Length: 82
Image 1 (cartoon, helix red, strand yellow):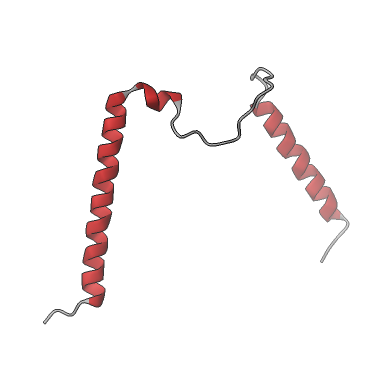
Image 2 (tube, rainbow, N blue to C red):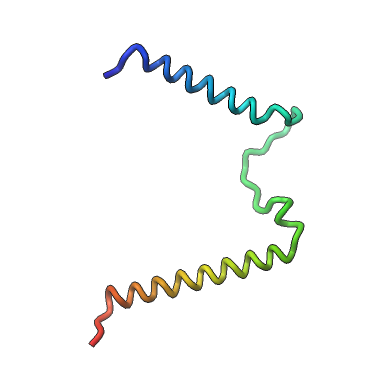
């Protein structure tokens, strides 16, 4: 099912992908150093301690709710109720 049109499709795809990348980065200054690593905390997150506290609280409550849900599921599926 390979046709002569397949390489042309890839060429158009790659050209559009490169143009979208260049368009997205048009306003950025050219810097010599770029980091492609994910940062542990972004500058916005590090600036507000209340938000950090709220986030930690939300994560803890979510983890507790998931634990409770799985505990109930395990009880319902694997434990006999006499």
